[in-house]
Image (tube, rainbow, N blue to C red; front, side, top):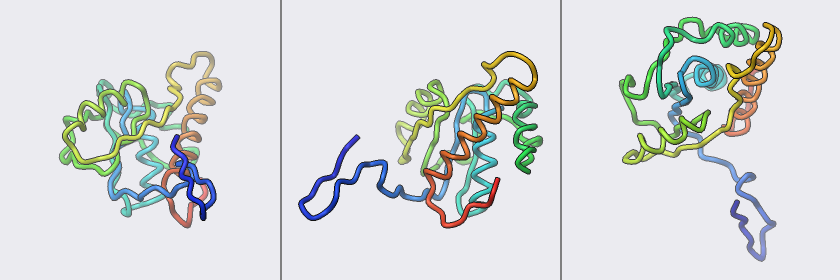
Length: 166
């Protein structure tokens, strides 16, 4: 982490600097069925048409969003039941200002795919709730934790004056 020091200004870390608000964001995870659809829906909720938002997976092997993802997003009033997983290659437009990766595999793939693009890639380490086992409540708790982690990260990363309550 870089630190900026000048004789007339206080010490400011990179974490304190305002980040440029992108015009378009692509969220990327492994299967585009859990984390990235949550991030896409939350970003669309908070920013509407101010930020063009989409999501993809490295491998889109499912036909729809994970049922637990759908359930925890419904708890906060967001419907992702119509989401259809897709891969980067399925995108109509691949020009994004920011690509946010939510898994290590997606980070490696994004770096490889965007090598010739003029975009920023950020890695947000995010819990994979599908790795949690146990009863329904344990699994739902993990999915809620992931949803809440993504929500907080979106609020922290994107500078807006007003956040609706989710």
